[in-house]
Image 1 (tube, one colour):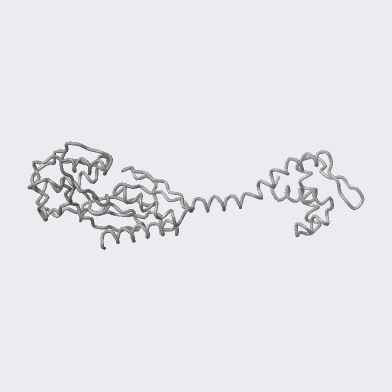
Image 2: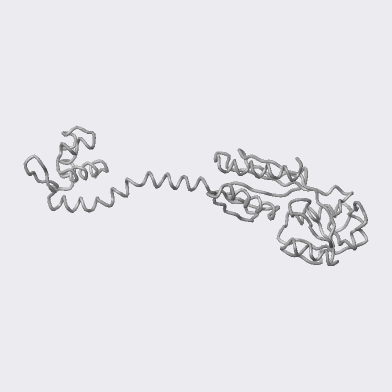
Length: 290
């Protein structure tokens, strides 16, 4: 059985007249008659009985008509459903946030306010998998591997030293990293790339920072530093304003402490994803002054 044969039979059954059915199907009457006969021969049963100029369904024809009623309606809906699925898929954006998670999530919320139909799928995994956009962190001059055909932009971010406002460093305009080597460090946990970057700065001046406490909350890190529990590295804009009377941020005069925030767009064929990528790059450029 062919789908066209079944549709021709179904239309003839609805019309109860071969000529009217052929007109509805925009085919010649003999072509419709031959199609019905081929279907009857294939099934080995009569589907119609003649009643004057009209036709009526046989018992087998009644059964086939009832079976096809739901099936053909479902088939007719398939193109529309496929278009709906395609449209839905086109509004999904998969983002892997490996750096600056607080800032990037705020930007995603900002973007969604003006694009409420976009559906974001967020992850934080160094196993990148299938993602449309990736935000990562690396040392200047050490860019990540960029897949062929992807778009990429990097933005420089200074990393400063957060110290208690009543510490002996608070009156300085800047500090050398070697001068704080004997202090305990308060660190943000769950950010391995950032840890590695900051440790590389310390290694340049000959020490490994002693981490006395780790927290997954920037506000907790800020609070502990303000309480005099230690000092810590603080990205200039991606972690937000220090916003505390108890903590101040000092530039590091040596070594040059900065990192690159890199935004990668892997799906350059999607206008929706490219628009989000452009939005991220535009906003990060504003923060970095680039």
